[in-house]
Amino acid sequence: MDLALLQRTLDEQGEPDYRTRQVWEWTARGAASYDEMTTLPKALRAALADAVPFSTLDVVAERESTDGTVKTLFRTADGHPLEAVLMRYRDGRRSVCLSSQSGCPLTCTFCATGSMRFGRNLSAWEILDQALHFRRREPLNHSVYMGMGEPFLNVDAVLESASRLPDLGITHRRTTISTVGWMPGLRRFVDEVDQPIRLAISIHAADPAKRSELMPVNDRYPLEDVLAECRRYVELRRRKVFVEYVMLGGVNDSPADARSLAALLDPRAFKVNLIPYNPTGLYDGSSRDAISRFKAVLERARIPATVRLTRGRDIEAACGQLASAR
Image (tube, rainbow, N blue to C red):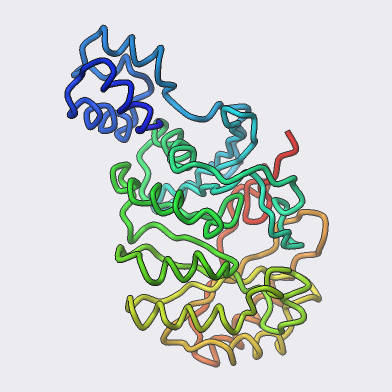
């Protein structure tokens, strides 16, 4: 729902300002069309249906996993593909994984999105329409900006979209923005965002040379500088930073790798989320034993660590698997 276009259209129709709020409230509650907005005059509903697309995105395809995860392939009005995911958990969580770009220009070697041709940044409305698509299915309560793209390369649209998620039932405390450490956007987030939105940093290797091999962005913005900015965030906001670490068999999963990671992190500031590798054809995933050993090293160093529950792997909807050539 492009609210700027909606406002212009309502102004042209001579409608009062509160109409925009009415339309948004219906949309955020999960209305599937203008026809459902019964507080609007019927003629106005028809006029809006003709002038303002109900979504900025078209649904191209949708798949559902055996674990209940749903992945949707969208296309923007100018033809760029993107994917978003609804994750359902037994404890009642309904989390949406949102994309901020069509493709990603940063080419992390373990991530399928990095193999796509980069399209463009998404608008705030295109990001919100991913969440609204799933909100029309069922209530939502969590969101993660961990889909296609680097959120802090599109920081204005990401923050604008995040500011409206509470209207959909997703509080700021249940929203997480994940970055590889794109410093200009990270600095803005640290300096400007007062809401308790969570921050997650993708590290994936503590050794600089190894991290640069996995994540070329490390050459531009070294991990040491990224972690310094994270520590500043903790000092200013009094909130821990989540560290994402994908487990690649024989690459970054040894006890020595774990000790190197532990040496970088202050347990008062960071919590590690170990991510079993979801196949994209480039690496082997770490064994369960290797992940357990890695986690044990972190815990002996008093670094809080969890292992991410994989969702949607059978439909290529899990972490690092989102990609589309269409």
